[in-house]
Amino acid sequence: MTVQGTAGKRVGVMFDRDQRPEDLAAFAAGAEAAGAEDLWLVEDLGWAGAMSSAALALAATERLRVGIGIAPAPLRNPALLAMELAALSRVFPGRLIAGVGHGVADWMSRVGAATPERLSLLGETITAVRTLLAGETAHIDGRAVRIDGVRLVHAPAQPPPVVAGVVRPRSLALSGRVADGTVLSEGHGPAAVRAALGHIAPDRPHELVVLTHLSLTDPLHDIAGETAHWLGIPPDDVFLATGGPATAASRVRELWEAGAATAVLRPVGGDPLGQLGETLAALGRRPGGPSAG
Image (tube, rainbow, N blue to C red; front, side, top):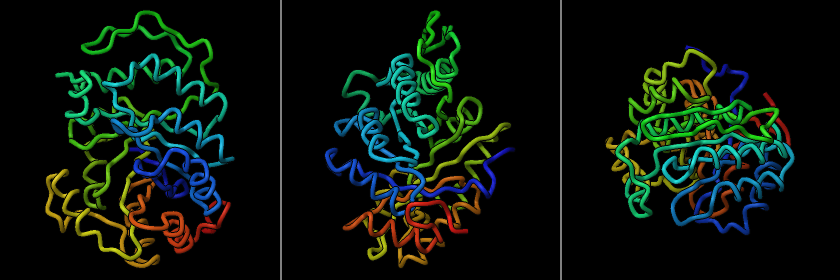
């Protein structure tokens, strides 16, 4: 198994879907100034679109890597998705990471995009997108995706990583086979991270990104209950970065030590950038620059 080593550990922040799109540029600049290495965006039905949001965040910053977490495969034709990602990657080389997932089943049904071939659709979409971004001609006649001789005119010189946002064992195994990395949702702690890596079983470099709620003042009991229900685990098993900055920082380190390459903080409550800055300082991250150690 090959995973990103200790030297590659990253910490990022999520721009919460409930925040206004017009506030994204300032938030991204603030996250970069605080020392974050990643900014992750959400593409949920009814909220802001990920491609336009990524463009705003990239244009407002100089070094921040912007992650799309997660574009629903049923909503995104793979050829069009590759075209969008290629354009962003050419203008902002090396600063994009693109997540693709199954999409929430109920949301996909509400827009007529539900499919019984969820696993095939995700795998074939990721394969098609990676093929196109590599500048190759895509010929896919799959169970869910059909592309006949399509090639990008403006393929990026540096293709962005395409990662799978998945949870269940079969989907994790699929991610290990076809994707450049995996994104685990909020609530996954060290034991779940190690278990996920066992299912992923990558045989080439594979970045594991783990999201986690952050609160420096609130124990987040309600969020723990909601997350437990969604993951199908006891509330006490839900992993949260709560407590003071030192405690939250120690939780991030636990994820890294378990095998996560990137920990993405999702601040809850007031002053999300302030919470981010305090946690980054406790992790030894210099404002406006890389890790202090």
